[in-house]
Length: 190
Image (cartoon, rainbow, N blue to C red; front, side, top):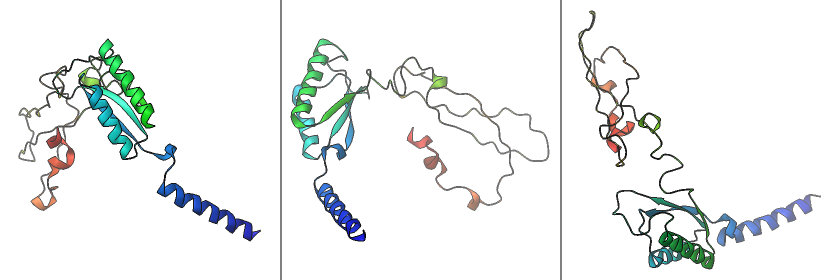
């Protein structure tokens, strides 16, 4: 009984080593393939897919996006775009790469013009006001700077809504402050 178990392990280890050295097609990674703003070309499609095949990419999730690139000639779903996408599918098949796509142009899975700023991704912003303790505060608190929209169709002034006012004693020593707080909390990345 134990002999059979060890024989099975040896066989599995041999397959594992072989599959690690030469992974089956089902184990190859997929990547997002962002095509910028109607700018694909047949030459570019072929070059991209051939490069992906060389490094072992098994599939792509094709996604047409606008990241501020100049507008190209192949508007999403136009006759030219369909011709180019058909070329991409033929090239992917030739190279053994699977191709899938987002269901529409842009960030439809996570956003779009139908999403109001209140429903979009948010970031918490803040200001600090130091006041003298032990007595009521009757001033006006500064409004934090709201981030402007990254995309053209977002609100120009940024969306802002108060969520809380926190009051706490100021630490007596700066050693209690978190170093580089802004970079750790994301505002410097927006």
